Length: 154
Length: 269
Image 1 (tube, rainbow over the protein chains, first blue to last red):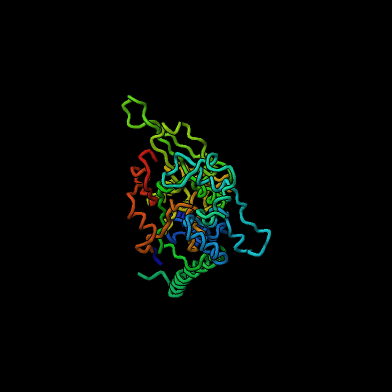
Image 2 (tube, rainbow over the protein chains, first blue to last red):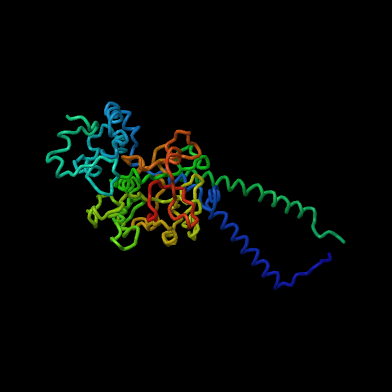
């Protein structure tokens, strides 16, 4: 048997080592790279699904409407129609999941919530209805305004 | 010249190559299946990120600075207490120029105490000296050419195909390069997870057909959220572009934000 090219033994060992390193790198890379890496780009595609698994805290007003449609209908026909229920009543996902559990409570409402939006402030846009609370009325907001239909008195 | 490879060894080598070619995709498929089982038990099933283009628009003419958005964001995303915000509301006060100074306008004062969640203190200048004052909600600008993504050394932050710029928390090493790279200051290093965090457009909500928490609670529709790939002609997001002259923040940086503003002054950065 005649060989075309006889590799010197010292070179053979170096080539063997280089091939071994490349193979080890390829095998390690194959098993260490997550399967979804490169699915959409140079990142782990499964991260999108993982980020979508977080538990939500706010339920959205469609969830409120399912049970409280009477109150919902009242709000959407009056001045506060652009408000979401959870803007004032606080996050409601826990209540939506456990509607009968008395320990799961919505936020306690306070008059500071009215003033949060309606206290006069020179930075607020002029179209927005504002009052100077200390000149407006000394009592409670709800003495004169129903929060779900603010132009109506109780 | 006699062939040095015998029939037996040739067949042996060929079968090894075929086995390798067959085994590689099988192993890869098995890995994909295993990973999907591990991560996405609760993920929305029918959501395809390539079929959406989420954007947010902000109308400063409508913002009343109530801070409900910043508060809702903190609650929805469990953002740590303290000076950490994924969205916040800034108050801009531009004062009148001093008489005879030759200037068109005076100073620009910007503040956002606790992101606007607890309201704003009395204006630092009397009402008569204010030329303009307004509120500007801020959040991730959803850049098409996001500097944060380019700065990330480990591929942890990325531009998702649906327009959201997201962080893979299992890849983030907390080096903070993205925080320096963001020209809008929209990122922070979480003291809880020790990774970078930012607005995800409430990715867990939008993938299920809900609005982001800040948009949900905004009482004046100053925040408008929509899907440009699936918007009907009367969609609020298209109405916003139609009814307003819009601008983006820091356009000279070439980041091409997807977040557009209406009714803001040149002083807003």
